[in-house]
Length: 500
Image 1: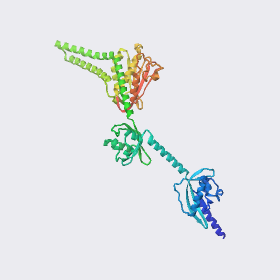
Image 2: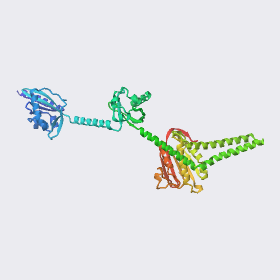
Image 3: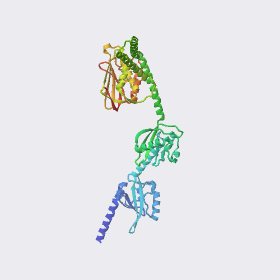
Image 4: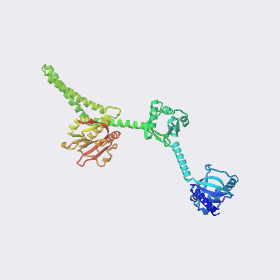
């Protein structure tokens, strides 16, 4: 008898140990709805001690608004008990001791222990799962709202090239409806009719998904060509979503702005060259005078019938050299005045500086200017527009000449210096003139800012826009020893020209 009692107790302890090991709350209820047994997880979930629940109605574990109905459901279940698994899609809540409502999943299973008929109620706290589902729904709703109403094109295509996403902005920009896109077997051919372009688009999307926006030129339903900027984002499930903007208007505006800048720069060049009319005339007059003198000397020698071959050769050589010199002046003038397409090409900065000095030589001589060029021994090739850079140098040098017009003749020095930093070439033009008005030095690159009586306030503003379009910056400063320094940077490319 004693052994039977021990065995029974040992069996009960094993059973209780098994119940407590289950990660879900377990409540054993008799057919009258009273709680017979609970496991430890029930105490954890609902906040009650075991002794507080034993003998209580199971309805104490649910919100009051459900209790009356639950009594009827419990009685109905007792009449035909059967296993009811979780996942019935019912919204069920438990009630904790402190009054919190807990979302739960419930499964029921009838069990007979001797003459005792019990119902095992397994209760799973699904608070975290519900919170996750709520966040997911909110995230999906937010994505849907962004997808439908954001002013950005969003589309996606499956591995067979069929469209699976096409938002309202896409419809607005391209003209095709979502239904038209979804039903088309190869929608990419609609806005990329050229097969080669289509291949390039597909290759880029597959090989370079990322956040870098790339410009493409798709067609619209009515045949217009757009300029669009697209980026491709790869999702965790492998799908690629494309995000894009129609930048056609912006690009057209940039072209128009660039065109206006080019016109303004050309006007500035013409104005500057107009200022140099006397100097340019002098530059042309010297070789022309030399040509005339040498030609007259040759004519006299021929008429006399007594002439030396070597001397005649020297006269012809002088004529050729003077002709070349005059041609260089005209060539430089033609480049400065010519209406041309602005192209960025490799150019030699030192040659550009020397060409500018050559163009200004007479102006420098007539104003008694000493010019000192200090350049590094090896200047890398630069990429840009040589005429525009020459215009910047022309502006800076003429500004320096004008700044020193009241200096003594022995104190008129312009120094042009180039140095190389890590990824750029720095060019500075320094003079010994009056310097820049301290009240305006921070604004001299803004339009219509000038401190000179005859200044228009456009030269430095145009120069600054030129340098910025080349990827560089301009700056200015007054020197402690007097005069001003104005400089600019230009980015490097790899190949080098030697300054010999």
